Length: 295
Image 1 (tube, rainbow, N blue to C red):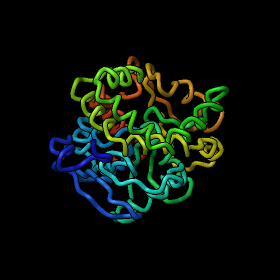
Image 2: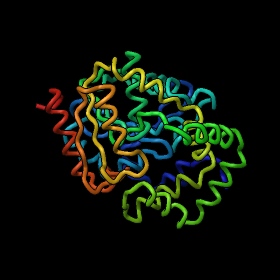
Image 3: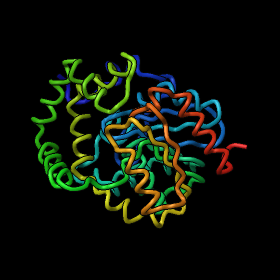
Image 4: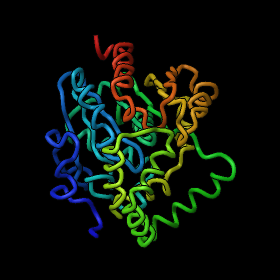
């Protein structure tokens, strides 16, 4: 079993392959998908995912925007950075360097799960200055109580042990394992979506990057920084999300950023944009109109 994904083998039928290209920035070889014309919309997927997550979502938005969506460092077909640099500030810095290399200034940014935290951090650092920031089931608040004391140390241990990532990848050969993982998000995906997650998880390098992100993550940086966020924040939340509790978005509004606007998606889980891409895309367009990106 090869350690990383191969574009020639694993990317041969990758969703929206015709929109893919590879660029070198920030010491990495990035896989980036770009499509459409108009205002620039930068989209970041979450931990453990890749650009496949936008397979039906991005083409709809490309009718209105110039969509730019990279695989995050170490994920999908983007090469990994050093383990210790996969922190929240590190990932925000890498994404900002990629955007600068591409020579674009995003008008609107959208992050799913951990992708939302990366974008918020980049905005707080002044590396990105969009007119609006959409957090789609964003992982923005630290783990509370016992999980916070157990989860991060365990991820650190797993991430530093290459055998663990290989064992995860071996388990992913069993499609039922991946189906259970997808089901645990509260979302229901078509077989093609499950197949793509299985393809990713069969790669030890991809698994190692996912664990490295979780091991180095410190969401207290977001919790402390949100009250200073000047970019308008729009929280889009699947009410059936069982990965990131919908209650977290309410906590953001009530305790940290009352100006944030909340849109709830009844019946949808953590992968809401994969379940009903057009419905979520319509919300993105409404936000873009609200902040003057679309007229």
